[in-house]
Length: 328
Image 1: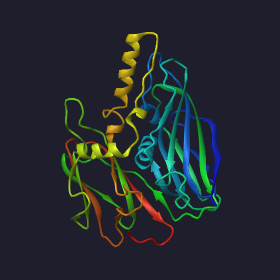
Image 2: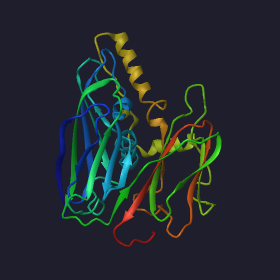
Image 3: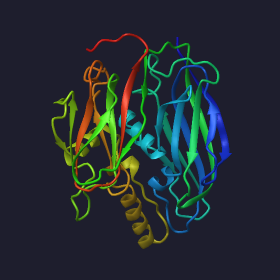
């Protein structure tokens, strides 16, 4: 019978902007996910730091096996990946607009399509083979006095059949219009997370990812063509309650309280965090029946139509099988 087991890797370690990356060996037992908690102080009186500015504290989080990246992305990207896979948003609590009040933020790093699956986890490794590397950003906005706690969620006595792998590809097209972004061929994919710098909000309807299509060996598959707005609407149905990503604060000053509520929602609206991400779900039933299979293929790529030639990021979610599996 599998057993859950929590292990503290970093226990309230002080972390400053531009500090040397933290590295730590991970446990050898099968891993379902990591939990990263950041404890900090609000550094601005009468203002609440946005969730995005808090997530931007960590520029990169990597899981490496024998020096090769299994999971890699900014903390914001990984938080959105957890939202896409599990429907669980980053937890930021308590919301505070008082200078030097404590704020906690928790983000999980998933290796599975659901937490605590007994047959899906990073498998047993040898001591020292699996490493966590955390890189702080060059500067922190709205917060200071950061301490970091990281815990590993192990599943003892389990024999995993598969785990998830996702790393980041970045591209800035040289011009608007169509451009291409390749994925590796060979893996099975459960989905793809996209980030676009520009989204169609306020008076402008321009987007970094206005339209996209998927091609395998130059044949359109699954997504012959779709628009940002439709994908965003579908992505909205796959994630948790939007209310969990918004918040407000009550104070004795009614006018100030209303302003703070409005600002907090705006900081976490389509203009700032959620709306910059899209998730293409190739596993909507959580049984891998719709997964994208690229074994034996020469090329798999997206054709993206850009209204604005600015940076996009792509994190394909590979399903790494530890046993032979056939398509459903």
